[in-house]
Image (cartoon, rainbow, N blue to C red; front, side):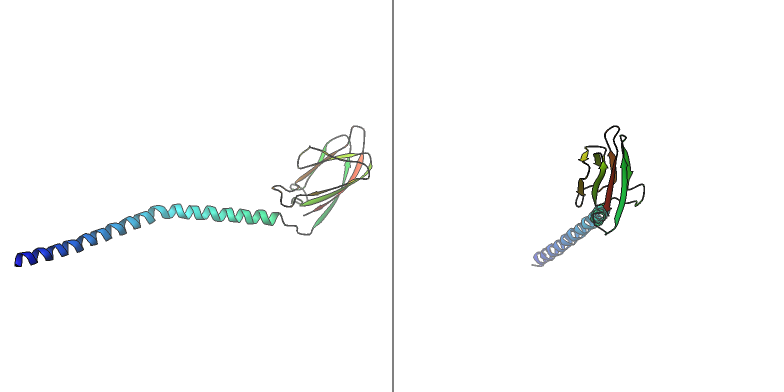
Length: 157
């Protein structure tokens, strides 16, 4: 009978030892996974916070601050431009109102020299870029050959 009891005790000890080894192995796998995955998770978190920060900056850049910038554009047969980012006010406009004082028609391009918006003598044009991917960074303007026009523009940023 002693032999049977000893075997039973040995089995119980062996079972505890197997559970202990399993627990240690699981702890080792978990710790190793954390060590391996942690830098990757940190990079993912940094990138996602950068995306959130970029979205916040974009949203702030789309906000209207209440500033108005008035300019006079003197158009002739040559294409001219007004760069709002590299020159004063050093920030793009959210919206702009154009009015052609003539005597001839003028052509206006927003951010690129064309497509052109035709502005007859005495006509006005309103442009609103709120919510657009790109605001008004440059204004291109011209007239037909041997023609002239004076255009008043009020930009809002």
